[in-house]
Image 1 (cartoon, rainbow, N blue to C red):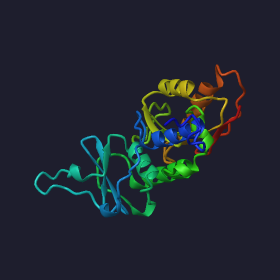
Image 2: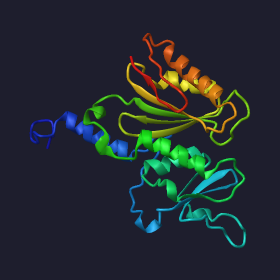
Image 3: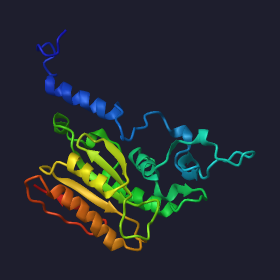
Image 4: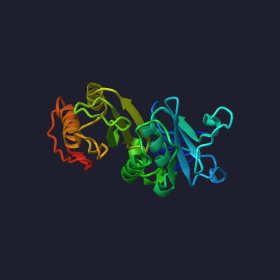
Length: 256
């Protein structure tokens, strides 16, 4: 039985390629990729979610509060929906899996410098740009093209709001044309520049946002420096002109 001999005429190689890549985008796990929850979540009480921080790890628990062991006074980590050392990753995970409801997000008291309001602000930005997981919004022809980054949010120094102008803490949330979302942590501006040069194809349009807490002491200067890193990384060595529009959290649009 050969699908390519005309036995099943309505399915051709392109259709099979599209189908295979839709399945791969949905189920195949890649480095840095945010996985999609497929199991039923109705019984988990996920209408309310609580962030908690302990031993340099972040946890997200279902419900209004984080469960604590009465004897050890430690978090009952086995009850967490998800855990990660990076709260930006957790926020992106919740948004992408359509679990983010800003009025129902909570945070247990902790020693970090992160507030629930900042998590909500970031979650709203991710949701407005990346939306939530939905294969139907991806154009079928995209699956016939090579993977490329189509949207990107550069989060600057989210956990530790530095008093310095020079920032070396970045988290890149990016989405490709197959509808997959990834999160990458970078600890220097040189690594950010190298990532952009390697992975952004300037022949294609890429929407990019910079995100920084509005309370940052040097907000404008940090945004300008991040803008310079991005523009210089993508404007050199590509042999094409760049139109750049950016102000704070407004989009940068690169058009060949």
